[in-house]
Length: 368
View 1 (tube, rainbow, N blue to C red):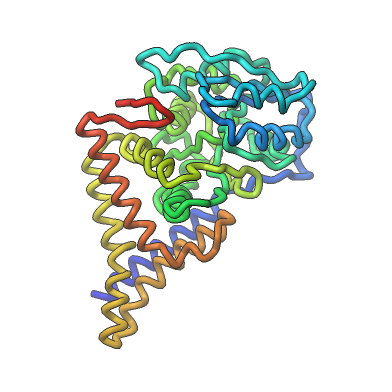
View 2: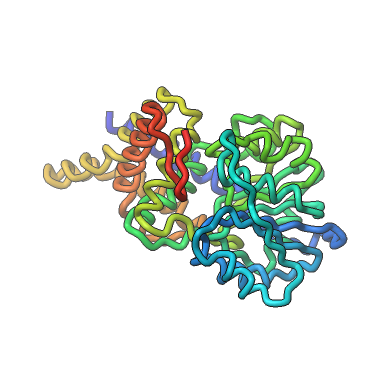
């Protein structure tokens, strides 16, 4: 029985490695010339982002691509976001701030903000960024070179600077889920909507693909609009390129324990299609292959049966490989069983919120 268990974990490790090397690194290539006449609209929704606005604008001002515009939307901020924006942009006329309209009842806040931003653009490409993002100076060049003839969208999961306890355990698990569960070669080489992953903090659309897919209006009531709009892009015949952008995009996501808990609570169950049977299947899978190896290893140490430690080492190797590929803190693999345990707790809690109609709370708004 142990040998079968180990073989399955080895196969999971091999699958993860293949997936990892299937994700193209976002980089510039001397073999591909850019059409610098193409204009890029960089679009950023903001709601109570006073801690992010100054470093974000500093980061954007370092971008080396010339044909750009920056459009920000103030989505009902009640802090100093707007004031700090005008202080920071100084006389740079590339930056524009628009005031968000009241949120209609059938819309999700961020989706409505992105929809309004899209109506103000003049670019050939639309790059949606979150306010907690910091970008490499060559981000636009690298992103444009990732597009092929039929690519409608380039997206990827950024690198995350980690601060809180739950942040260390859970935020890097976004990469873990992609590397472990997504058939990356199908996601990147086909238009199959089911093979889809995306991260809303960094999404660069070809304008015609965005408009043909219906834009953010098409997914106006989605809490996981990044995934759903990506599926719409594919349904309209465009390919989506999921990249490893951890060398290019930083995302200071969910900095406090409360933000981590609320953020993942609102995303997990909707991200699983609000399907309780899929949640149950994943909970069983994680308990058997990712959490159970820890007590098994403890038992092996006490009984001096050291072969029982092997499953835990394999699960840690899976996590270590992913953390190295995504430029995350290398030592996080040590807490792999605890990361999975807390992720299972959050999956169950998110499912409870969804099925009980208590709703999901984020930035002062509650959604069903």
